[in-house]
Amino acid sequence: MKTVSESRVLAEGAVVVALAFVLGQIKIYRLPYGGSVTAGSMVPLLWFALRHGLRSGIEVGAVYGMVDLALGGYIVHPIQVLLDYPIAFGCLGLAGAFRKRAPFLGVVVGMTGRFLSHFVSGVIYFADYAPEGMSPIIYSAIYNGTYILPELAISLIIISILLKTRFLEISSNQ
Image (cartoon, rainbow, N blue to C red; front, side, top):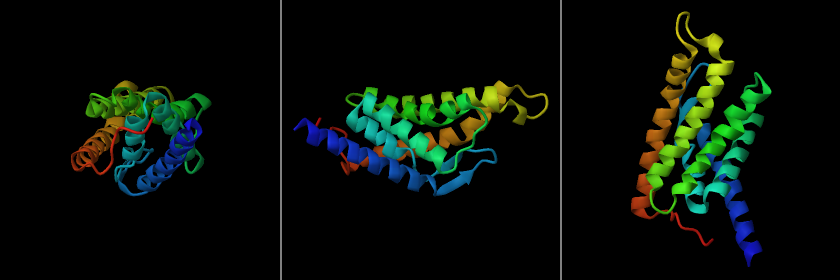
């Protein structure tokens, strides 16, 4: 029966990636050089990690990152691609490490990981976009924070509602 369970997780992962992508197209606010506040596009990925754990969460997040790249990504350098797509979204899977005891902490840790990956990319590869006289570190923190923090808040609110209403369960059959 392990094959059925693995197939179910794989199918759920594919649905989650598709749902996250569709929700990502509903933009509340779009920043000029990439990044946006969406209608909860990170929730399916975070929820998957909370249901299926760290490894599966990281894998599905990384797959989402590659889909996002393939369907409209921005490429400056190969390492920037890794930081802004599979690593950044794979970090959302860190939520899976907190699935049993602290799902909200898991959401914060996953989104913080995503922020840090985009932050490092911004400091290294997008420093030229910083206003004259502004440190690339400060610029990257402010720029990336302007969409990651609202995305975090939206994700926490939606996941809180899902948990309180028991609309979706965190524990899976694994």
